Image (cartoon, rainbow, N blue to C red):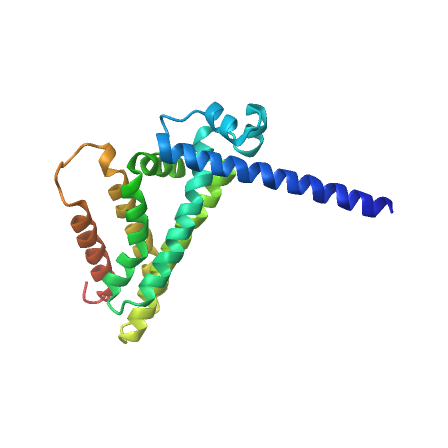
Length: 217
Protein backbone atom coordinates (compact mmCIF):
# COMPACT_ATOMS: atom_id res chain seq x y z
CA UNK A 1 0.00 0.00 0.00
CA UNK A 2 2.86 2.38 0.81
CA UNK A 3 4.46 1.72 -2.58
CA UNK A 4 1.15 2.27 -4.34
CA UNK A 5 0.54 5.54 -2.47
CA UNK A 6 4.04 6.76 -3.36
CA UNK A 7 3.43 5.86 -7.02
CA UNK A 8 0.18 7.84 -7.04
CA UNK A 9 1.95 10.81 -5.43
CA UNK A 10 4.78 10.72 -8.00
CA UNK A 11 2.30 10.43 -10.85
CA UNK A 12 0.32 13.41 -9.57
CA UNK A 13 3.51 15.45 -9.18
CA UNK A 14 4.59 14.56 -12.72
CA UNK A 15 1.22 15.63 -14.09
CA UNK A 16 1.52 18.98 -12.30
CA UNK A 17 5.03 19.49 -13.65
CA UNK A 18 3.89 18.62 -17.17
CA UNK A 19 0.93 20.99 -16.85
CA UNK A 20 3.19 23.86 -15.74
CA UNK A 21 5.67 23.17 -18.51
CA UNK A 22 2.86 23.15 -21.08
CA UNK A 23 1.54 26.47 -19.78
CA UNK A 24 5.02 28.00 -19.85
CA UNK A 25 5.56 26.77 -23.41
CA UNK A 26 2.21 28.13 -24.59
CA UNK A 27 2.77 31.47 -22.86
CA UNK A 28 6.31 31.87 -24.19
CA UNK A 29 5.29 30.90 -27.72
CA UNK A 30 2.44 33.42 -27.71
CA UNK A 31 4.48 36.27 -26.22
CA UNK A 32 7.43 35.78 -28.57
CA UNK A 33 5.08 35.62 -31.57
CA UNK A 34 3.17 38.73 -30.51
CA UNK A 35 5.98 40.94 -29.19
CA UNK A 36 9.25 39.41 -30.36
CA UNK A 37 12.17 38.37 -28.18
CA UNK A 38 13.28 41.86 -27.19
CA UNK A 39 9.73 43.02 -26.49
CA UNK A 40 9.00 40.13 -24.12
CA UNK A 41 10.03 39.76 -20.48
CA UNK A 42 10.15 36.63 -18.35
CA UNK A 43 7.72 38.32 -15.96
CA UNK A 44 5.19 38.69 -18.77
CA UNK A 45 5.60 35.02 -19.63
CA UNK A 46 5.16 33.90 -16.01
CA UNK A 47 2.09 36.15 -15.67
CA UNK A 48 0.55 34.71 -18.82
CA UNK A 49 1.31 31.16 -17.70
CA UNK A 50 -0.16 32.03 -14.27
CA UNK A 51 2.86 30.82 -12.33
CA UNK A 52 5.42 32.48 -10.07
CA UNK A 53 8.56 33.87 -11.70
CA UNK A 54 10.69 31.65 -9.48
CA UNK A 55 8.80 28.60 -10.74
CA UNK A 56 9.42 29.64 -14.33
CA UNK A 57 13.19 29.49 -13.85
CA UNK A 58 12.95 25.89 -12.67
CA UNK A 59 11.92 25.00 -16.20
CA UNK A 60 14.14 27.40 -18.16
CA UNK A 61 17.11 29.30 -16.76
CA UNK A 62 16.77 32.41 -18.95
CA UNK A 63 14.67 34.13 -21.59
CA UNK A 64 17.08 32.79 -24.19
CA UNK A 65 16.44 29.24 -23.05
CA UNK A 66 12.70 29.85 -23.21
CA UNK A 67 13.13 30.86 -26.85
CA UNK A 68 15.17 27.71 -27.46
CA UNK A 69 12.40 25.63 -25.91
CA UNK A 70 9.79 27.15 -28.22
CA UNK A 71 11.82 27.26 -31.43
CA UNK A 72 13.19 23.74 -30.99
CA UNK A 73 9.64 22.52 -31.56
CA UNK A 74 9.32 24.71 -34.65
CA UNK A 75 12.62 23.35 -35.96
CA UNK A 76 11.52 19.78 -35.26
CA UNK A 77 8.29 20.31 -37.21
CA UNK A 78 10.16 22.01 -40.05
CA UNK A 79 12.56 19.08 -40.32
CA UNK A 80 9.68 16.62 -40.52
CA UNK A 81 7.97 18.67 -43.22
CA UNK A 82 11.25 19.06 -45.10
CA UNK A 83 11.94 15.33 -45.01
CA UNK A 84 8.53 14.59 -46.55
CA UNK A 85 9.01 17.21 -49.26
CA UNK A 86 12.53 15.99 -50.10
CA UNK A 87 11.31 12.46 -50.78
CA UNK A 88 9.23 13.82 -53.64
CA UNK A 89 12.27 15.35 -55.38
CA UNK A 90 14.54 13.38 -57.69
CA UNK A 91 17.09 16.16 -58.23
CA UNK A 92 19.59 16.30 -55.37
CA UNK A 93 19.80 20.09 -55.11
CA UNK A 94 16.01 20.41 -55.17
CA UNK A 95 15.71 17.69 -52.52
CA UNK A 96 18.17 19.41 -50.17
CA UNK A 97 16.53 22.79 -50.71
CA UNK A 98 13.16 21.16 -49.95
CA UNK A 99 14.60 20.02 -46.61
CA UNK A 100 15.42 23.57 -45.56
CA UNK A 101 12.53 25.46 -47.20
CA UNK A 102 10.22 25.06 -44.15
CA UNK A 103 12.96 26.62 -41.98
CA UNK A 104 13.22 29.56 -44.37
CA UNK A 105 9.45 30.08 -44.35
CA UNK A 106 9.36 30.07 -40.55
CA UNK A 107 12.31 32.46 -40.38
CA UNK A 108 10.61 34.91 -42.75
CA UNK A 109 7.62 35.12 -40.39
CA UNK A 110 9.71 35.92 -37.29
CA UNK A 111 13.16 37.14 -38.42
CA UNK A 112 14.12 38.71 -35.07
CA UNK A 113 13.30 35.58 -33.09
CA UNK A 114 15.09 33.42 -35.67
CA UNK A 115 18.26 35.49 -35.35
CA UNK A 116 18.21 35.20 -31.55
CA UNK A 117 17.55 31.46 -31.81
CA UNK A 118 20.57 30.98 -34.06
CA UNK A 119 22.68 33.06 -31.67
CA UNK A 120 21.57 31.00 -28.68
CA UNK A 121 22.30 27.76 -30.54
CA UNK A 122 25.84 28.80 -31.37
CA UNK A 123 26.82 30.85 -28.33
CA UNK A 124 24.42 29.90 -25.54
CA UNK A 125 25.41 28.31 -22.25
CA UNK A 126 26.75 24.74 -22.58
CA UNK A 127 24.58 23.77 -19.61
CA UNK A 128 21.26 24.79 -21.24
CA UNK A 129 19.31 21.60 -21.86
CA UNK A 130 17.26 23.20 -24.62
CA UNK A 131 20.43 24.31 -26.40
CA UNK A 132 21.65 20.71 -26.38
CA UNK A 133 18.30 19.62 -27.82
CA UNK A 134 18.54 22.30 -30.51
CA UNK A 135 22.05 21.27 -31.50
CA UNK A 136 20.84 17.68 -31.77
CA UNK A 137 18.21 18.88 -34.25
CA UNK A 138 20.88 20.68 -36.26
CA UNK A 139 22.90 17.44 -36.33
CA UNK A 140 19.77 15.65 -37.53
CA UNK A 141 19.40 18.11 -40.43
CA UNK A 142 23.04 17.64 -41.37
CA UNK A 143 22.57 13.85 -41.26
CA UNK A 144 19.45 14.08 -43.45
CA UNK A 145 21.41 16.01 -46.04
CA UNK A 146 24.39 13.64 -45.87
CA UNK A 147 22.20 10.55 -46.21
CA UNK A 148 20.50 11.97 -49.30
CA UNK A 149 23.85 12.82 -50.91
CA UNK A 150 25.19 9.31 -50.32
CA UNK A 151 21.99 7.70 -51.59
CA UNK A 152 22.00 9.78 -54.79
CA UNK A 153 25.70 9.13 -55.38
CA UNK A 154 25.07 5.39 -55.14
CA UNK A 155 22.03 5.72 -57.40
CA UNK A 156 24.17 7.40 -60.03
CA UNK A 157 26.97 4.84 -59.62
CA UNK A 158 29.56 7.35 -58.41
CA UNK A 159 29.80 6.41 -54.75
CA UNK A 160 33.18 5.77 -53.19
CA UNK A 161 34.70 4.62 -49.92
CA UNK A 162 34.87 8.24 -48.79
CA UNK A 163 31.32 9.16 -49.78
CA UNK A 164 29.92 9.10 -46.26
CA UNK A 165 32.75 11.18 -44.82
CA UNK A 166 32.52 13.74 -47.62
CA UNK A 167 28.74 13.84 -47.33
CA UNK A 168 29.00 14.67 -43.62
CA UNK A 169 31.33 17.57 -44.45
CA UNK A 170 28.91 18.77 -47.14
CA UNK A 171 26.01 18.57 -44.69
CA UNK A 172 27.86 20.73 -42.19
CA UNK A 173 28.81 23.19 -44.92
CA UNK A 174 25.20 23.50 -46.07
CA UNK A 175 24.03 24.24 -42.54
CA UNK A 176 26.77 26.85 -42.24
CA UNK A 177 25.54 28.77 -45.30
CA UNK A 178 21.94 28.31 -44.11
CA UNK A 179 22.87 29.83 -40.76
CA UNK A 180 24.39 32.85 -42.49
CA UNK A 181 21.25 33.26 -44.61
CA UNK A 182 19.03 33.12 -41.52
CA UNK A 183 20.99 35.79 -39.64
CA UNK A 184 21.65 37.99 -42.69
CA UNK A 185 18.81 40.45 -41.84
CA UNK A 186 20.69 41.40 -38.65
CA UNK A 187 23.80 42.47 -40.55
CA UNK A 188 22.13 45.11 -42.70
CA UNK A 189 24.40 44.17 -45.61
CA UNK A 190 23.39 43.87 -49.25
CA UNK A 191 19.88 45.40 -48.99
CA UNK A 192 17.57 44.29 -51.80
CA UNK A 193 19.78 41.30 -52.54
CA UNK A 194 18.01 38.01 -53.34
CA UNK A 195 19.38 36.02 -50.40
CA UNK A 196 17.40 32.89 -51.31
CA UNK A 197 18.82 32.74 -54.83
CA UNK A 198 22.28 33.18 -53.37
CA UNK A 199 21.64 30.42 -50.82
CA UNK A 200 20.41 28.05 -53.52
CA UNK A 201 23.52 28.76 -55.61
CA UNK A 202 25.80 28.07 -52.63
CA UNK A 203 24.02 24.81 -51.87
CA UNK A 204 24.27 23.76 -55.52
CA UNK A 205 28.00 24.52 -55.49
CA UNK A 206 28.58 22.47 -52.32
CA UNK A 207 26.65 19.55 -53.78
CA UNK A 208 28.51 19.80 -57.08
CA UNK A 209 31.76 19.61 -55.11
CA UNK A 210 30.55 16.49 -53.33
CA UNK A 211 29.69 14.75 -56.62
CA UNK A 212 33.08 15.59 -58.09
CA UNK A 213 35.33 12.58 -57.52
CA UNK A 214 38.65 13.14 -55.67
CA UNK A 215 40.52 12.12 -58.80
CA UNK A 216 38.78 14.71 -60.99
CA UNK A 217 39.38 17.40 -58.36
